[in-house]
Length: 145
Length: 145
DNA sequence: GCGAAAATGAAGCCTAGGCTACACTTTTGT
DNA sequence: ACAAAAGTGTAGCCTAGGCTTCATTTTCGC
Ligand SMILES: [Mn+2]
Ligand SMILES: [Mn+2]
Ligand SMILES: [Mn+2]
Ligand SMILES: [Mn+2]
Image (cartoon, rainbow over all chains, first blue to last red; front, side):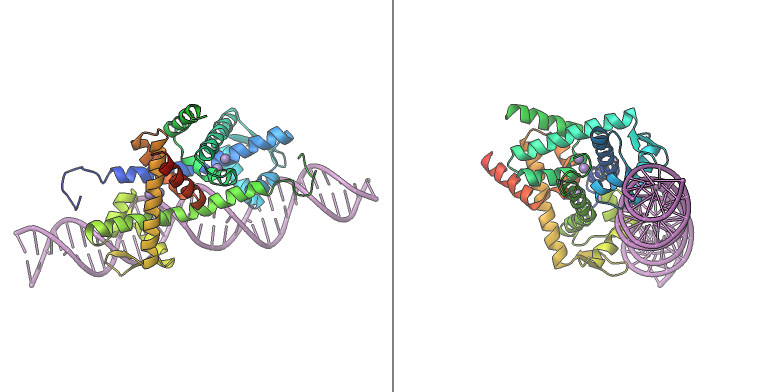
């Protein structure tokens, strides 16, 4: 539309895409930390801030801030100088995120992306895969084994 | 690896994934604005801040800040109370981003994602698709027409 | 041409998410 | 048992990217 052709041809469809992408972005950090904390608990029985920071590739106060946000959102609990643990909601999120991550990697590999690259890209991609798209991926993978 | 089995079994491979994802994220905003400004110039001959803001779904000062960053990075130029234009580098970025966006949508649709959903998800996904993955998508689409 | 409307700029506030520096607590080794 | 080392918390700084509010400029209608 050059300016005001029809009252509402588009112009509102465009913004929605970006708004949704921004919403997904705001969950990305939470999702990655939840999954990683769950990994650490499985491996070590607890998740320590220092190791979370190491694996995320950030300084330890950065990890501390992320944990604070997880707690604020009801996804984690912790006490001073003790390990970090996930709430029920946190564990559920971690499980969902881990499954989605795997599906994304599987689909990438299935269409010819090298495994190494698939692992790298999936870490960013996963957070923008909607439920609908995820189900489409799963269906396609089942149909193309 | 419970703690320190082998000197460097892993623990450094994990962080790289997140570091790469963060790097991609820092380019996402620039990419979307460059593409949109290019769209507007093609449609209207120029890109006005108000319309950029409308299409991005943000307030106009937010768009102004984004344009300031584009200028700082050598991707755009503008003068007070006049339209925004792209530099050669900006036009090149826009073209690359537009092509990648289209490829991502095409691949999603090809594996069974509804077009509407593909358009929504692609707006976030595109920024995390590496060159290697993009080429794999293109090859797969050629092989599965 | 001029006044009203629209667009733009500028200032200032907020949160998220990075960082360093430093203080404090816990763990560890002798 | 106690000193050193490791881990953790806190404070404070930075940038990006949202927002509102208000001043200024341009554009438009008459
Ligand atoms: Mn991730
Ligand atoms: Mn992941
Ligand atoms: Mn985008
Ligand atoms: Mn796009």
